[in-house]
Amino acid sequence: MTDAESLLTRLDAASERLQRHATEAAGAAGDRLTSPEPATGERWDRGQVWAHLAEFIPYWIAQSRRVIETYEGTPVPFGRTKEDPERIAAIEQDRQRQTADLWSKVQGDIDSLREFIANSDSKTWVAEGLHPKRGVMGMDRIVDEFLVGHIEEHANQLDEVSDAAQRA
Image 1 (tube, one colour):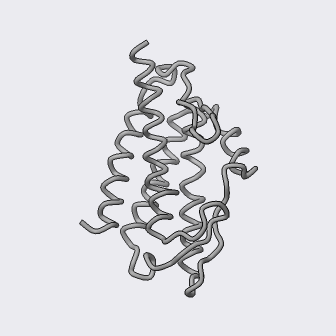
Image 2 (cartoon, one colour):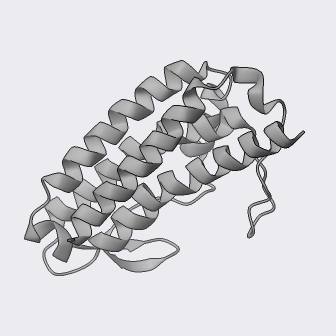
Image 3 (cartoon, helix red, strand yellow):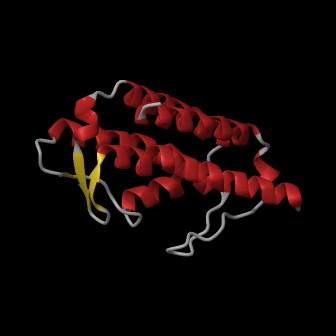
């Protein structure tokens, strides 16, 4: 299995988990929060997780495309950090939106990501970006950490919140 095939398999599995969570009753998770983020202690409610999923996928696809299109042998500056005001504002703005609306957007974004990965050629995977905190990153790591792995991370959070609600 190629790296792209592996990424697509993981993406499909995460998408299936997200779809299950999207169909849960909105109150099923109650007011449960995610476990604290190790570095910051930050905890999110279900709405924040969905709002973040809805905002980050197109952002990181666009950043990845920019790195690929402008790479000429030198790592291309890209990305943002968790402190980015636009990121924070987008999450806050959409955290009260209906999960079904956010899922519809996320589903379309996942389809775009699937297409991006499936249509990637050798030029894609040799490109390197320079992230403000993580330094030089190859495209395989960018797609894994900021897209597929990031989606998996938030699917895990929704699993956790849902499981905790079912045990209560």
